[in-house]
Length: 157
Image 1 (tube, one colour):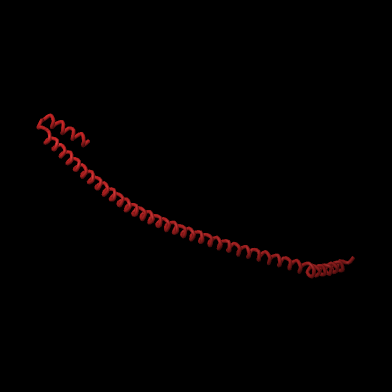
Image 2 (cartoon, rainbow, N blue to C red):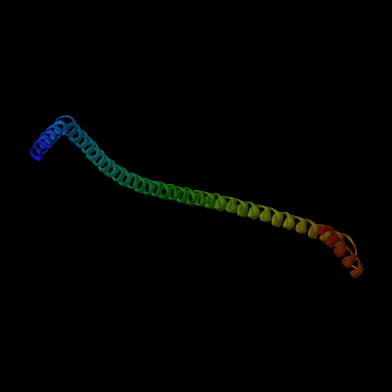
């Protein structure tokens, strides 16, 4: 065998093999790898975009929660102010009513006291007149006077 022919045959076989690999295997393999690289790049870009959207949504959520807390605090403060106002109004109204009731009670007590005093005066006057009439009608006697006066006092009780 001739080394040159073998070498030349091997070179032709190698060139045919390289051409065959390049034509049928290399291009599809490179295209598949490029497609895979593009899909991975798109997936990473989508993941980054998704991560940014998640961060944006998280920030929006935090902002909305903070606004809700502020609004809730405002509503609570307003309700507290209204309840305090209502309580103060109720206290003022009840104080006025209590003052009216006390004034009416005091007025009624004064009237009752005046009536009782007037009745007492009338009773004392009547008893005194009766005692005086009995004393004048009876003889003047100290024991009789004391008895009449004590009887009059018993009637007062």
